[in-house]
Length: 148
Image (cartoon, rainbow, N blue to C red):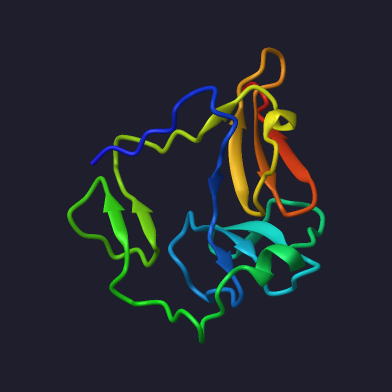
């Protein structure tokens, strides 16, 4: 199975909105913490939840168009696995490989993304400022790799 993000499209991958944070997800899980509509943050799990946003986002209007768990209950068996036939990781989309990694959608500048969705994640591939960017519903947060 191939999941490809075309270059130059000014679009990103939108992370799952989570209204209740899982207590023990698989390490490497990345979500938009929507437990507070006015305090949304992108987080990843590495033995504990680590905040990637560094600041609150307001996703009140975005949540109004998202179904609640009562309206659309999650099916335990509903998942897509890429890279393996089976997995013990619990997630909607599981990318699993011992030799390959996921390559994020690449954009030249987040300012070119007209309507970013809360939870969007992209790789900014701009000369002199290559970095990871996540949108928490209000602002973009950036991480620039430092040379070893």
